[in-house]
Image (cartoon, rainbow, N blue to C red; front, side, top):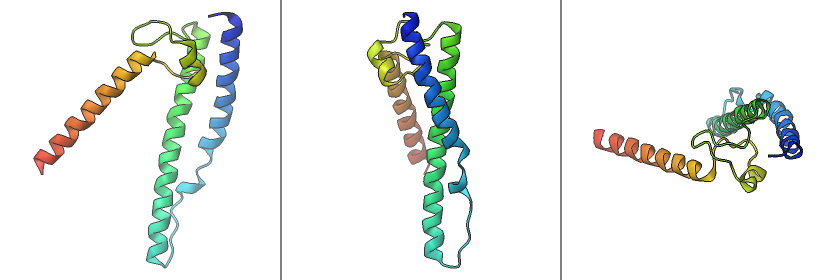
Length: 127
């Protein structure tokens, strides 16, 4: 990867880092509010759950962006952490913070689905 390409990805990652840092600091949506109306309580609980999930997703993305910036500094950016092959430019353009090539990501997704299905089966059989 050329120095120009690396600088382009660094700029994209730093911009994403700044954006996510602002989003993650905003935690007003997870505050517990009490209201005398039970329906309002249910609605607020649903909104709080959504805010928590969004915060969790953004926090995970922030960790991935920081890790990608570390890989840029270490000189390993664009190399799959699993198979150590180059990650395609097309994939890096779409997700510059990705640590895995498309093949390893697909395998990881399949394994995650298998684990989830096994856990679901275990829960059903236990009941």
